[in-house]
Amino acid sequence: MARILIVDDEPELVDMLKMRLEASGYEIITAKDGQEGLDKAKQEKPDLMILDLMLPKMDGYKVCGLLKNDTRYSKIPIIIFTARAQESDMKMGDEVRANAYITKPFEPNALLGKIKELLNE
Image 1 (cartoon, rainbow, N blue to C red):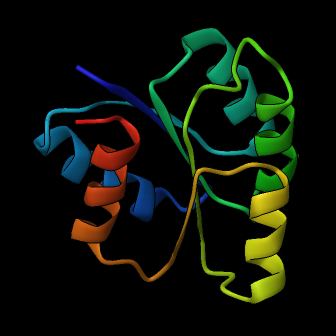
Image 2: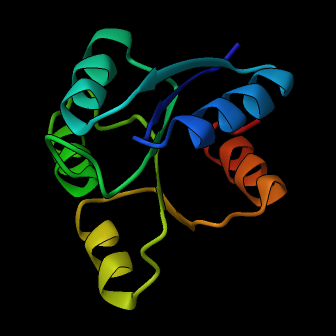
């Protein structure tokens, strides 16, 4: 069973995502800020990460960049999950080597499809 780390500071969104993904057969780990997300990614080594950009303590770009620049964690696929849909935001996502960029509000089936694609399911 694939383990997915969700890093987002909106509890309702995290709960909804957690329920949907658990119903699809995934094990879910959560973190509510960037620093906790980075720590949990290193401790748990999830199979995939869903990462918000606007986070307390450390933003999603920094978390993504730190993980992608560390050979121990660089293989973890990271989906940037954000309300920020400007081209400059997506360009930053590319620069920190995020594997995908999904904007909120999101289409649940599109997110599930991207997860399956990144996990080669």
